[in-house]
Image (cartoon, rainbow, N blue to C red; front, side, top):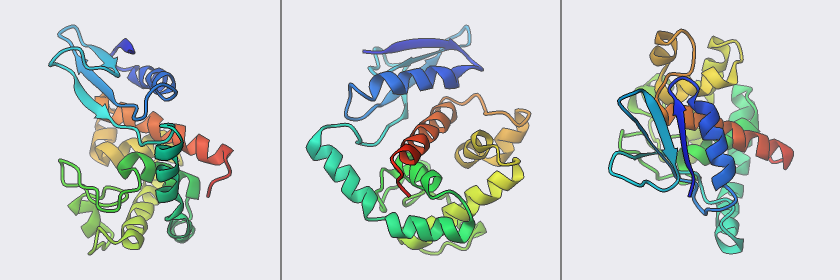
Length: 207
């Protein structure tokens, strides 16, 4: 069991530690968090009381031969579409793959409680913005998500952390906090998680 506490404002490092410790121990590195009355955010991979809420579910990657093979198979089935979308938007295929891994675990029918849909978990406003009419169509969903992250990278001077934070929390939130990662537990979990997979896919030479 991992328990980690960190004052609000430097929580991304807590999440990095949490992910590194849970990744080798658990099939799904679920991270839970709550912020106490003193403004201290507590993280754990085992929620020990009712105040904890899940802020990140890491995809099945290191869960053993069977689960790992299943995750790899689902990942590999979208290699061509990811490369196509990345090429059209002029973004890194490894980044796009990392985002899909964290957003949906390569499930094209994924729907979040907030209504985000498909491989890249596009919200209705994002779908309208990028002309995505069929969010559960992998090619169309990837095209919309790739275009969005490309625009965010351009807006934030190719700062990948800020672009990812905006993808997760919205551009208004990033701007409201002085072009920094907003102090939202989900967003501060999301950014290092995507970067973790991005580095992993790069080191494994996965497109």
